[in-house]
Length: 308
Image 1 (tube, rainbow, N blue to C red):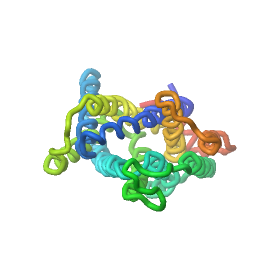
Image 2: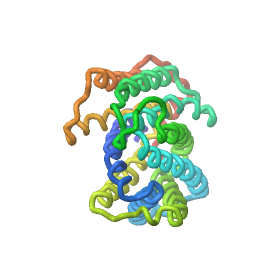
Image 3: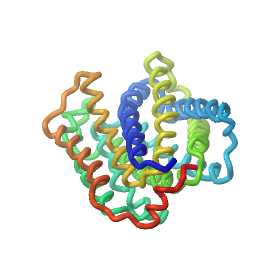
Image 4: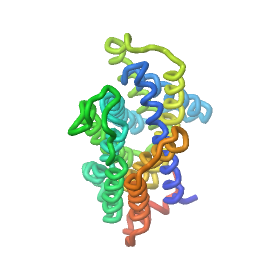
């Protein structure tokens, strides 16, 4: 059995769809608990589910590479998850989506730190996708729920921008580690790191903010099971076969899926400009995959190696 780039692309599209729906859960949960509490519980749920699966497969014992790699991935993920969840409380959803999407443009830069040289097609596709994100989020709305104007940077925007930087680093680091590690064990270790780190900090800071309610608990379960356990594990599986920049373009489609789900589930409507943004993002995905490129011997060897 050989590695399949098409299979990786389909998995990454599924990841983007799950992440797009996850924004709804994040907004709902923010009303009844702090960002660290939310992250600690949902990542604990994700770790528990993966732990059961690994135990049933008798693959529960991580090696040294997976422990060290998962630890660093977990540190980066904990920071990114906190910045995003905290920032989304103090900005609009559209702005949060746009600024988070900046990681698409940053992934090629982060990848250089690990010796990953992106193809020209990946860079062009990423640039087009970012232009689409800008159009998709161009209409920020007249004000926030508390009446603050949307002109200039809002209090949550710097947190979301910093989050995008960390997500780019996470995607690049995952691309470096995924081909040499068991994806389930690597995901489990990083989830454990996020859960422990977030929980330890949340106990003294956010205990008074936790108000159990059905909507918040449902958002926790959805986010823990699908957004964390399923989507992030699938990301690692797919990135065994997909270059980091190309993976980032595909995963950036979470904004498109969020818009579509908003139409279907919440009765929202898109303007012509926003539809154009969706079209550009899809174009970025196709360009990164279809532009002519002569494969190097290293790329050919990578694609024809048997799956571990």
